[in-house]
Length: 117
Image (cartoon, rainbow, N blue to C red; front, side):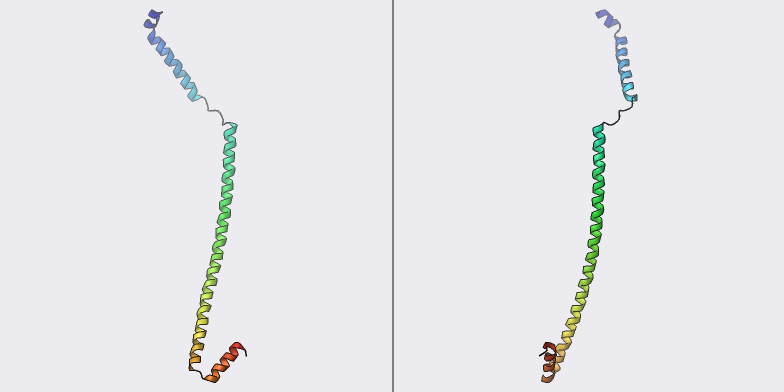
């Protein structure tokens, strides 16, 4: 038996390498099996979650746009308040100048008109 291995070692090694080559060739050329049901279920769940996230993003985007519109309205109101405040300040500064230059009768009439007494 020892003599058989010594004399035919090249053929034995080539046969083993041939079997390994054929096995690898078959392994490479056979198509991969379809995904398992578990993997399909996981992918479906991921798709569902991404759709939910997209819907959430759209609703958040709409909310942000609504808040930006409201902020613009509030800014307009603030600017109108500032304008009216300066008008009121101008009114009172004019009245102050009138009172400084007015006599007692005029001051009395201004106060009566203002406080209705």
